[in-house]
Image (cartoon, rainbow, N blue to C red):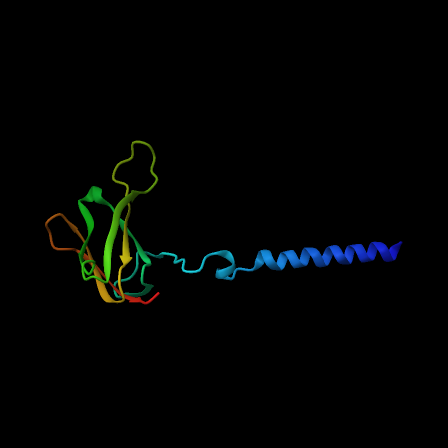
Length: 145
């Protein structure tokens, strides 16, 4: 009887361990993720930062800002060189108590890596029509997928 129970437990253990190996397999071809690309996200990067993207990938830049002061981020150059293009830009305000004004947030830019090459994305933080008080340059290399 003990031999039968031991055999059943051993068989069940081998079955479960065999299933566990399959469920933990993260090989892209097995999971259908082949060719998938995750966007690169940079939050308040230092000027002079370098990024390498695969063609077709996206770069998401999150930059602290407070438009209630009159200052806003803008793309100065590099997004129209054919290598990268601006997909979207948005402002996301920080959580704040009801009725509170003047609270900052983040400007979020999404750039597409359109073709293989290199470019420098230049952004400026300034009041409308003025020379930027702060600039940000990010060197981007787009490599083949």
